[in-house]
Image (cartoon, rainbow, N blue to C red):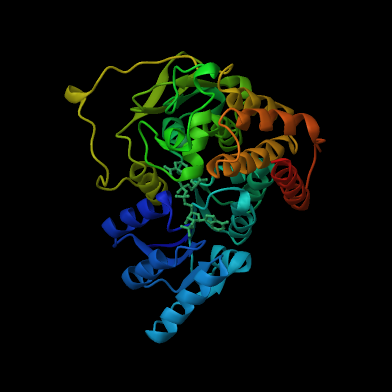
Length: 383
Ligand code: NDP
Ligand code: MG
């Protein structure tokens, strides 16, 4: 029996993680959950799974859930804010922390979990982009596993099983291409928020959906792969594969390529991460090769989707540059979702912030938090 905390239990990944737990009640016990403000969904989770702790990071929602539990005599402890997140990330009675909050807000709780010796099922890629070096070195120090939930990284992780790391020649990171695949800059001048949110293959939270439309998501994933698998940036090749059947591949030095395939369902990588190294009965649909459309591959267009090019650049510069890139992106996506800037401005803001802010090659946690808020403030003040 593995005991779990889910940070961000009410989101797209959180909900699908609950679905896996529901199907494998004999394997998992839900100890703690968090949400930002979705009190209704947290109340549903408390009623169904009876976790010992729930955290809300928004005051009104926290009060609501606390009152509900008091009125109904429920023994779930309700905690508030970042302190609450840090508490449930490091509980003694927990084995694995699923990090499915969105944004670099997940960094500190993830570090707390690692320092408390918890394995991490990592969906929250921004954490690794911002603090990769710190997170990985803490993970090594505390001898914990980081199990990737992101479908591409879950695939790479599986393709690496049973092989020597030294024999890897490159990683082939697949990308659907997002809703604007094949478009040029001039086609994207007036795209709306709704158009950008319409992902052709995956149904996800708003932030990652916009990241998929700009290809920033793939850029974040390149940096995520660099840290998770200790591979040089030049050995990570992005491959647009619109059908999203191959979730990524690893090429070995003898030229053999190992791929992982599956339906486009996040429950598959979530289930593998939670059960690793075991495999359990499928919770996602199986692939049927007789029904399959052609599998196609293309080179990504980094002139139109500058976020991907900039991510490679930021990763190669290293130090606090990926944190600058990520902060600029989080702020820009929020502005775009609020209809305050146009779609193509997202890429411009990334480039501007990368040029404007000074990079620190070595850093501690406080430096990351400081640069994150500085960059976000700069972007917000500009619009
Ligand atoms: P969602 O927006 O659907 O969910 C985000 C979760 O985080 C919710 O539980 C939300 O609570 C909570 N949250 C939001 N803001 C805050 C905050 N300021 N403080 C604390 N908690 C907060 O996101 P996704 O599930 O789509 O994505 C989560 C992470 O997983 C992201 O890093 C994403 O890149 C990654 N990922 C997602 C995939 C997907 O298919 N969705 C695939 C691969 C990776 P509330 O509901 O109350 O707002
Ligand atoms: Mg992914």
